[in-house]
Structures are given as structure tokens and as C-alpha cells.
Length: 217
Image 1 (cartoon, helix red, strand yellow):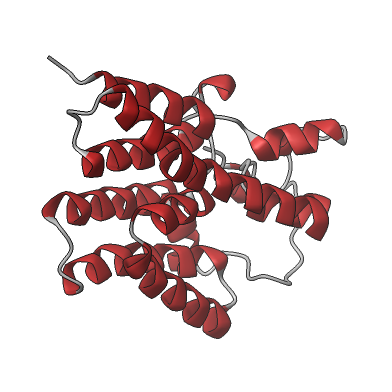
Image 2 (cartoon, one colour):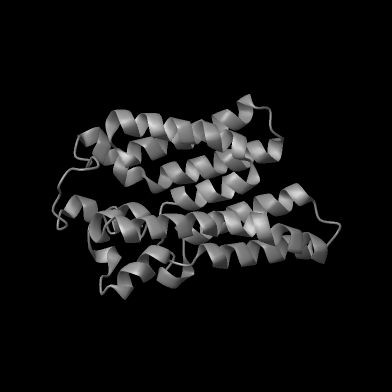
């Protein structure tokens, strides 16, 4: 029989992760974030369209959507079912929150790319490999000024870090899944990077650019 704790964790984490923060913040300002800039509801597009304040707010809330379920809800789920495996409960909360953000039911299952939410989730789940991925992100971004390139390479660094640190097999697997999902969600960016048309931070780009509109997920 499937553990009550696992079911509770999956459903609650998904619905917390599914809150479309960027969409709601932009909507409050009279903007449909899906129709401007990259069309993505994540923090990067909010930064570009609405500025630093809204962008930082969306970044922090999206990260909290990943951190909160693991840090606060895992103990509640385990109290509901003492037979559940604590590590698996936290892993399910992690995956549920990321899937909720990336495929939100409130926007026809078209959400963000999951970098901020994944960062929050792995900060609570297993911070050591996240630290490796974060340093990788900072270095790549500093050298390239591409948010997308830094995100993709750090997505590879996360599972590599998990394997190098000798984490448990379930934790290694979930870092691979999260990293692969992040790369998949950046496939449009990867195509533009290869074509030399991706936008660096600080560069101006018309919001009507049809290539960027194809990025919306």
C-alpha cells in the first residue's frame, strides 16, 4: 500500500510549487508576462520586463516554493505516517515542488524553468552538491553573462557533485532527474546559444523578437 506520507508529500508539494509567482506579480502590474520578453514566467523574464524589485521578489518566492515543503512539511508528513522513509519523503517533496513550478496546473501546465525552485529545494534536501552547482553558475555567468548557459552547466554540475560527494543512490538519482529536467526546459536557449542569438544580461532586445517568444514553456 502506498504510504499516506508519500501521497500527502506529492500533492502538497506540487500545489505549492504550482503557484505562478511571476505571472501573478506581473498581472498585478497589468502585464501578462507570457506575452512579453521571453514569455517565460520565471524570475529572469520578470527582471527584464518589470525591473529588479519584482524580479528579486519572484526569485525569492520561487526559491521558497522549493525550500518550504522540505524544511517545514516533511516533519508533518512523517508524523502522519511514522513508517515512511524520511529520505524518500523529502525527495518526493523536492520533485513535487519542481514539477509544480515547471508544469503549473493554473497555466495549462506551462510554467517556469525551475532553476530558482530547484535551488530552494536542494538547499533543504542536500546543500553540498547545490553549493558546487551554485559556484559553477556564478563562474560561468561571470565569464559569459548568459543566465541560460550558467543554468545549463550548473544543471550538469549538480549530479556530478552528488556522485563525487558519495551521496545515497536515491539522492544521486534525484539530482540527475532535476538536472535533466532543467536542461530540457532550456532547450530553446540551447538552440539560440548554438546559433549565437541568445541574449546576454545587459543587452537590449526587442520584446517582439519571435525567437524569444518561442521560449515560453
